[in-house]
Amino acid sequence: MYRELVINAVGPEIRVALLEDNTIVELYVDRSDESTISGNIYKGRVQRVLPGMQAAFVDIGLNQAAFIYVDDVIDERNNGYLEHVYLSNQEEEEASDLSSEEPPVGKAVSLPRSKSSIDDLLTEGQQVLVQVARSPIGSKGARLTSYVSIPGRFLVLMPTVDHIGISRRITDEAERLRLKDLVLSLRTQKVGYIVRTAGEGLSEDKILKEMQFLCNLWEDIQENFLSAAPPALLHQELTVTLRSVRDLLTHDADKVTIDSPAVHKSVLTFIEKFMPRLRDCVTRYQGPEPIFDAYNLEVDIGRALKKKVWLKCGGYIIIEITEALIAIDVNTGRYVGKHNFEETVLKTNLEAVREIAYQVRLRNLGGIIIVDFIDMERKSNREKVYNLLVEELKKDKAKTNVLPISDMGLVQMTRKRVVKSLNRMLCEPCFYCAGEGTLLSKQTICNNIYREMLRLSHDVQGEKISLRVHPDVADLLLGTANEIIISLEKHLQRQVVIYPVDGFHIEEFNIIEVYEA
Image: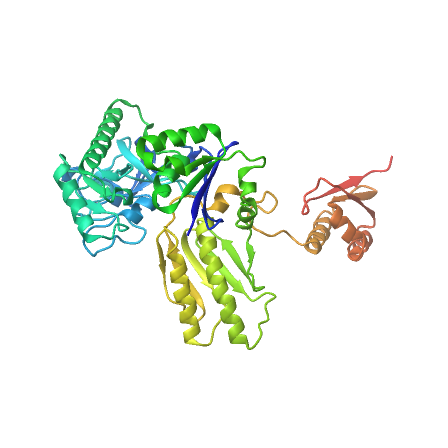
C-alpha cells in the first residue's frame, strides 16, 4: 500500500492529510490554539480539590481549568516512582512490555499502586508539574497527569516510571531482547524508556545519544519548574507537521509533499538532524492550484462533515454525535437488491462496515460508539458483519474495543479519544438552532403567532395590527394558513397586516400596534 503525507501550510492553519492509495484516511488540523496542547508540560497551580470526585482542577494558563484524577497524581510518599504514564496514540501503539500482558485499552501503561485520596496528594494553591494527557474537548477541560512522558525519535522517556518497553511493531524476539538489554545497561538513572518502532536495529551509540538528550531535556524542564511562576509552559510538543513527520514517515508514509516554502525548509532541517536517510522522501508542491484541490481532498473532507454518507450500493449511513455517545444508523436507502431481502441486508451492512470504519478513522470519532445495523435473521450473516468490522478497524492506530452484534442488531464499541473530532474542530453549533439540529416548522410558527396574539388581545389598543415575519412564514399566512389571520381579525375586531422581513430568523416575529393619524 502506497502512503503519502500531504501538508497544507499556506494560510492561517496547518492541515496534514495521510493518504493510502490516494485516499485520505486521517486528517490533522493545527490552529495553534488550546485544542492542540496534548503532550505539553506545564507548571500549574491547584485551584480546587474535589474529594467527592477524587479529582482536582488545575490552572495551567488556559481559558478553561484543566483537571487531574487521583490515579494520575504522583504519590511523593512513594518517591514518585509508581505506576503509569499517559501516551499519545502513536506512543501507546508502540508501548509494550516483553511479557504477554497488554496495556488496558485506552488506559496508561500500568503497574500496581496503593490507593490514596486526592486530598492526601493535593492541596489548594499547591504548585504542580503536569503534562496534558488529553487536549480540551468541547466543554471538557484538558486532562492532566503527573506521570510525564517525553517522546524522542527512537525512545520515549518516562522519568517517573521504572519500566522498559519495546514497540509491539518490533516483532523479532531476538531484537526485542537485544534492545531491552541495551537500554537497561545504558541507563544511569531509575527512569523508564519505551523503544519506538524507529529504534529497530539501532546501534548502541545512537541509543545512548538519544537517552542523554532526553535526560538533559527532562533536567531543563525540572530547572524551569523551580524558577517559573505558575501558570507556565515548561515544554511544548512538536508542531503537528514535525510530529506527523516524526511518527508517520518511517513506517506509515513513503513520501511527504508540502506547499509552504518555510515549512518545507523546517521539515528538511528536522529530517537532516534526525532522519537523514529519508531526506529524498520530502518534496515541495509548486502546482498552480491549492495542494488539497490538486489531490481532490476538499471533497472528502466536506463529505466527512455531513451526517448522511451514501454507500455505492445505494444505501446510506447516518452519523449522529451527542454528548454521551456517537450513534451510527445503517439504512438500505435506494438499494432494493436482486434476489431476497436477507441478501440485500447483508450486502448493505457489509458495505456499511467498510464506510463506518473509514469514517470513524477520518473523523477521529472517539468515546462510546453505537452502530445500528439492519436486522439480519441468520447468525452466520451477523458474524460476517462483526468479523469484517473488527478486521477493518485494525487499520486504525487508535485503540478500539468492539462487542459482538446483539440480538437487536446493535454493535457497541469504544475508541480512544485524545483530541477533538473533525466535526468539533471544523464546525460550531448552528446559531439558528443552537445545536438542536432542527427548526420549528413554518406551520408551528404560524400557530405560535396565533396563540401569542390571543395573549395580547386584551392589551391591544391600536386600530390595526402590524405582523412582521420571515418571508416564508408570510407566504404561508397569506396562502394555505390564511384561516389563522381571518380567525384573528374576527376575534380581535382589527385588521392584521402582514409584512415580510428578509433579515428575520425563520422563527422570529414582531407584533406591533398601529394607530391611525
